[in-house]
Image 1 (cartoon, rainbow, N blue to C red):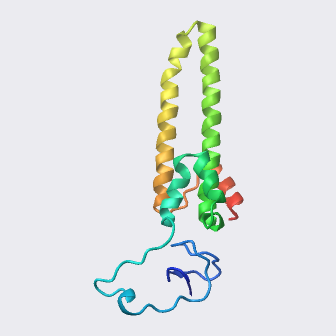
Image 2 (cartoon, rainbow, N blue to C red; image 1 turned 45 degrees about the vertical axis):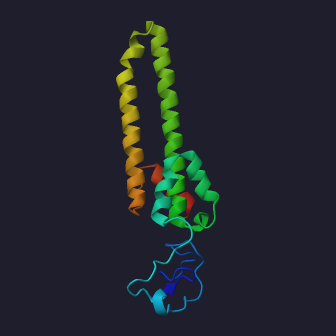
Image 3 (cartoon, rainbow, N blue to C red; image 1 turned 120 degrees about the horizontal axis):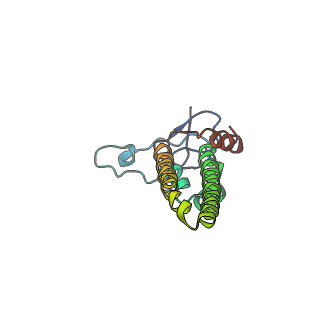
Length: 165
C-alpha cells in the first residue's frame, strides 16, 4: 500500500495520484508527530483543492462547461474517475440538447400545420422531457457525489472508453 506525500492518505498500488487530495503519489509520507499525530485538540489537516467526491458532482453542474473545465484542470484531468464523470456529463448534455432541438422543431412544424392547435398538444410532452432531464441530471450528481460510477446505458459506455476504462 502506497501513501500520498501531501496528505498521507493510503492509495492503491499502481495509482499515480491521490484520490483524497489529487497529489502525485510518491514515497510514503513521514509519520506525523506531536499535535499533528491526530491527538485530541489537534487541528484537522487541510488538503489542497476540492474534495474528490465534490469534484465528481461538480462535473455535472453546468453540463458542457464544467465537464470540459475539469478535463483540463490539474490535478483532476489525471484522475480516471473524474474524466469518466466529465465525459458522461458532456455526452449527456449533448444528447439532451439534441433531443430538445428536435422537440422544438417537431413542435414548431405541428404548430405551423395546425395553426397552433397541435403545438399546444405537444406542451405536456415538452414538460415531461424537461422533468425527466432534471431528474436524471440530479440523480447523476447525487451518484457522483456518493463516489459511485453510475453509467447511463449508452452514454456511460462511451464515457468509460474515453476515460480509459
